Amino acid sequence: MPDSTSPLPSSDTRPHAVVIGSGFGGLAAAVRLGAKGYRVTVLEKLDKPGGRAYTYHRDGFTFDAGPTIITAPYLLEELWTLAGKTFSDHIDLRPINPFYQIRFDDGKVFTYSGDHAAMRAEVAKFNPDDVAGFERYLARSEETYDIAFTALADIPFHSFGFMLKCFPEMIRLDGHRTVLGVVRQYLKDPYLRVVFSFHPLLIGGNPMTTTAYYCLIAHLERSLGVHYTIGGTGALVRGLVDLIEGQGGSVRTETEVARIEVEDGKAVGVTLADGQMVPAEIVVSNADSAFTYAKLLGHRPRKRWSDGKLGRTKYSMSLFVWYFGTNKRFEDVYHHVMLLGPRYEGLLEDIFINKKLTEDFSLYLHRPTASDPSLAPDGCDAFYVLSPVPHLGSGTDWTVEAERYRARVQKRLEETVLPGLGAHIVTSHVLTPLDFQDRLNSLNGAAFSVEPRLFQSAWFRPHNRSEEVRNLYLVGAGTHPGAGVPGVLSSAKVMDRLVPPATVPLEHPASERTQDALNL
Image (cartoon, rainbow, N blue to C red):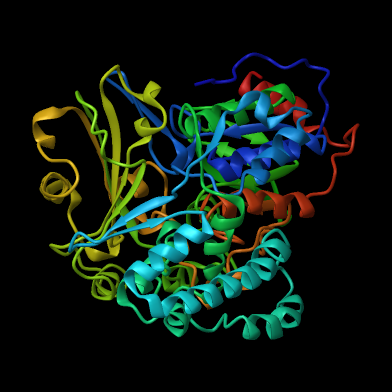
């Protein structure tokens, strides 16, 4: 992956913007800042860009560490357009249909797709009496999407007055209810209630507590489709880095930020872990919002996001992820498969409320080589299996539990869709909540930052323009509108609305001092 170390011309006096972290939110922010006239430096702690969208290369296999689907391609297309390029010339994005296969513990399978007639038939297969409720639920999802996503996802929620103006619509759309609560209004069959309420888990939410606004995901998928990037999600990361470099910006890996520097209440740059000061006119943090305030701004008093406030905030669950490659192809396994355990609501309660690691679990199995054989050697398959687990507030010692848990997951896969798996594994890597804490700087090892509850949404989330420090902006899962690829890309759009255009020449050109500090 690129590590931009070549010097920029000394005559480059554009205002300097530093972006902390190179997840999708940070990379999208960098492209947008570059389009506004800033010289951008992205600083990444890890050895490659991507953040949660990091890519592992092992023994000839390629594994996307995090996101596996793209559901709102237009948000990416906008970035290429801003950089003066055409998305389709650089990225091979292909629709996946059906979207998922959902396999219940008793072996029943629901095939979830974008084909309306096929979906009606699937619903009728489980309960013909629920077809009419399914139709009404889709209409409800579309209405919610039109307001909560199309109209508000990229609008700043910095004014409580603006929040109050939106309140009537929020009540009308049952924002005070939960996703599962709304689904129950339309569907009676217990299997179908699971099928149409699990989506909040994709963004770190508990369907039993996540605000009903997230019912919009059903329409988002149906209207915009579910897509896969040939070459894996890492191809998108590489493409975004190319855009940034093409704008004259740079992405520096293995460069950890230790703190955000503040003078007279204004962010003036960052100090790196090695002690170097990097001046900047604008600082954008794509780090976890809690980490940004508790660690990067931990040296100064904070009014709203104090340590106490951060401690009272509810955080998402974490994830156990096992990446493995096999020396045979399992042709009967679909690209996206949900393998559900024997419990639904009870398991959610144990993960989110009780914070208890249980014997039973549900799994998401990703087989990208079903669509893109290039990610594995000839005749082989690459897999990624994910299990939602409690964050580190559970007290689980993952240094002890990781292998035990992996073995249980393998056994479950062998009993269901991958018979004989153990004899064919040729490479393996595990990610636990400790990795989210230590590698990705996520408080409590939460995989999706702040949990998307009603009073942790919109105005109640950490704002995209910091409430604590001027010239500091936040993007990513922990700010508005929330987690998931569409969410974090939208957070960069919000930031774009807030950051003023660059002014050249500068009165106080931090660019020159930055050039010396980083040898750019």
